[in-house]
Length: 139
Image (cartoon, rainbow, N blue to C red; front, side, top):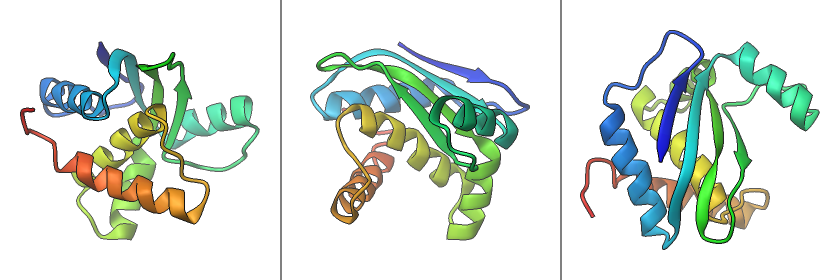
């Protein structure tokens, strides 16, 4: 089950399409879908979480709490819409594309992908690109 929660004045344009897409990401990695909660928020909201739970006094676009057990993918994914908008502008991409990248990024972490080393970050980026292309594609 995938749920979308909003802590600011923002809504996904078509939650059903995003739900199908995230479900397809999970199944494309040969994993099972548990419960994934997306929480869309602003910078202040996510900054407080970053300081309180991770002891990082920085802004970020995403924080994910992974509750995956074996192949059952589940967790809470907090996304700052402000950061996504700024990053889309900085990277010269559409907001919707950057949002999909961040949404896929959180799920890919749950599937076992890392991004701390350069090689891992390169693989993560390739996987993000692959998953973005799956949006609106039936498997």
